[in-house]
Image: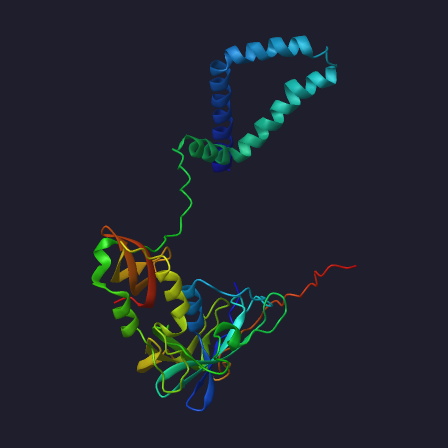
Length: 188
Length: 163
């Protein structure tokens, strides 16, 4: 029983403290609001006054006496420094860096090396086999001043999945500007 | 999330479930995946590939899928001139073939676990290694083989113009 009484007393005291705090902090605002209300609100009935001046505050008082820990929790949360919302996680986009480049090749060397054969003839006898169209699209972007380089790199995507990627890059003045991945396997 | 239907693999004269999707790598490398109809929550990828390992090589020997216009997809549409068999030289990775009874059902992806996993390492379409991993012993009444417990089917709505 003592615990319950203490609980209620703390609630009443807290409510009183909050009321006083607001009274002194917002005095100017209150006066301005009272002035404004006095001008705009017509004279009220006795019942209106009873509800506003007695029943409303009493209901708040009783409710606060029961749920004051919630009010404290809300107040503490309000005072805590707010965490800025994290930026939307952007999906990482794979790219080839100059450090990934292995060696320079001619187009003819690559095409001779990347012919794929199969004893059951289940692949076209062309450079990169079923990926030949990808190679054609890639080489269409070459200009006379560009170079072809092979690359090897390990890549980790936005979900932390690691892979080992091999392919060729079009290089201009030392920088890879286009690439094709010809092997995407487990990380090594 | 819903558990996904597996791919099918013909291995040592038996059809087994394959919980790896080598064809997805092809779509990624080419940057071109056809618009497939998704008819079920258990088949988000829109297709079931039929695979075979012969002579230590991985082949795609069929595909069950529908294009978004309702037309059935066949291998020839993906690999011109190769209607029956395609050497999966683009694939490097490890195939997972669950075996035995179910240890734990996970209603998402290929997350369920089974008594054994057969892992087959593939390098550019060629088998480079195999290993069987034991994951535990299932209870006597546990379901046998790869399963999807529940799914939602999507109805096809004909959006053709009415005249």
